[in-house]
Amino acid sequence: MVRPNRATITRRWMTALALVAVACGNEPRSDAVRDGIKNSPPGVATAEVRQTVMFLGTSLTAGYGLSPDEAFPARIQTRIDSLGLPFRVVNAGVSGETSAGALRRIDWLAQQGPLAVLVVETGANDGLRGQSVDSLRSNLRRVLTRALALDPRPVVIVAGMEAPPNLGQRYASEFRTVFPEIADEFKVIYLPFLLNGVAGTDRLNQRDGIHPTAEGAMQVAENVWQTLGPILDSIARVPANP
Image (cartoon, rainbow, N blue to C red; front, side, top):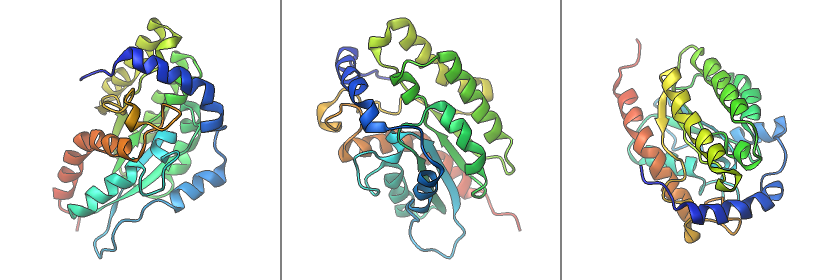
């Protein structure tokens, strides 16, 4: 996997650190979570039952600074619809959420209906705040434990994330390795660095240097689709139970 230029990312992440309180806010309230699900793109009308693909994430998933149809989950829904696949995308991204917040939400989100696929994008705000890598690891383990206990059991994808390099090489390295290690431990699918090809590229990021523009979100959607697309195609080919 090609890594973004670290010198450029350092500059961008340091700017983001100064703006994160404004850009991301506090941990989400329950009404914000409900609104996020209620306003998720429903996809095209169809007589076929649609299975749910849920994106549990931060402002990167929610589409901070973008219109709802520009966020990368909406781009995924557009691709799904264009291919005639029977899936409905739910954008459960909330700005400012840490892995602890994702853990608090996972049980409630699971009650919204059976999930075919759960994409877990969390940790960006842990890194921005320099929070403990051990805490991130523990929260991710607990999120995956609960997700994999669901019946029916969804396919789970863990998205990789990078920490701000200005927090030190050791922290950045330990942070980066959490995601593939947890994915391997739980035998779930690992999606390499979510912002690959976007982080550190001026034209693909908003003025804060961390949230993708509409064009950047299209690249993120492409990154996600490389992993998610074959999974959805495989699920769609399985005959429904009579």
